[in-house]
Image (cartoon, rainbow over all chains, first blue to last red; front, top):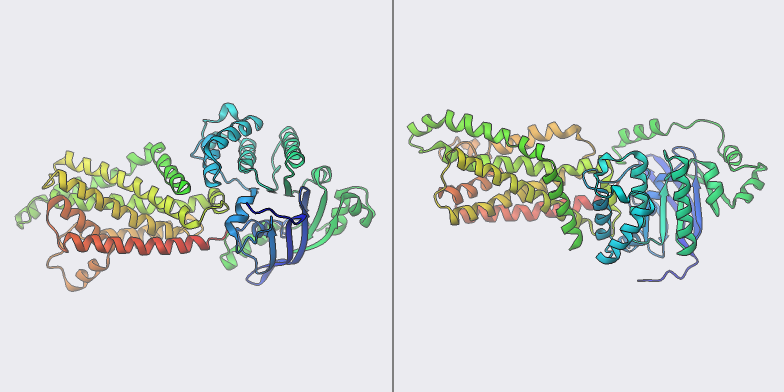
Length: 267
Length: 249
């Protein structure tokens, strides 16, 4: 394994992504330090998911450079891929398989030795409270249970960076709380870098070391919570966010479907 | 190799667990066998063709493999819609292996489906010319047909986003492939245009090979059938791999 000697887990330079005529991400640059929790915030349609997709090799950038644990996700795809884990915004489990099988499947794809995989799967299933449901089909699970299973799955291969795209959407406070407790512990104990997008401002304020705010494809502010509050002369992240991005309601669904229709772009 | 095996295993598990689908997809071949097989039986005999069931059975087996193969190949579209495709696409495994595993799995499923239809044919009165050699050779051809059309289904599916185009594919791809393949009629003495079309249809070689294995009657000869199928399989796997590599979500 190659050791990433740089102090940064993620480095992004002049990154852009255009879909035909629409520029979803415009020339953004930022770094995420190793071992930090980095919150990436922005209104609907700001370019968060597009950025995550570029960072995680799902789409290729139009321009710019990315380093994930020292690897270029375009040229060193597989090396970059085995070094991160991702929990997607929308479900990505196989409903026709059991909870255990979904995790087992992941372990094989990520080349985790069988014995270690078994130990980790058991531990993670217990942690997310799905141990007694491990042999049930995922199609019988509720939304929250699926989410928990996906979190467990994303951690099997002990990623150096964990991407979370709105991970707590639709979770009850109990689950949200225990999830963050576990993630913070991993972050501390193993130095796992966490890159998270969320719409819950209190959540970001509570967990993040650094916060970046993106709007209309551009990063408009980056810093710690107190820096952001200071710069905007507000006393909560929510107020700072609103001050920076304005009060207009965004219509992500409408514009993206229109965009997809116009250009046949795949989600 | 783990990833290929895992993708294969997943297809097998999904097939095994959907018994209703398994049974449901037997209705159509059974209907064709009974209605056409017995319906045209006397006409075919009067034209000195021999037993129509014996002629038809390999064609119907090939048909059921064709349908199952294209459909399982196209399950990629479901995976895209239900999100599971993303999980396989961010994994540190080459996309070709992912595609190969799924295709092998789909092909195994389609072959199994073909085997069930073969047993149905035997129950209904179909008699192969030789059992040991014939049936094992037939199995080879069944797998080749399955592999080819699963690969084609997968390749198509990696280019489409939703199941709206599904009817189009059934009507403009699967149906013509089946009806123009010589599954239902002998290839001798066809009008020139039709004869040409049947020779372009890849399923023709599958049906001919299968028929040759089971009944000893062949139009092209078993070697040509095998070669054509093998070459087409390699080409479609290659194209499928390329297209799979290009999927962006």
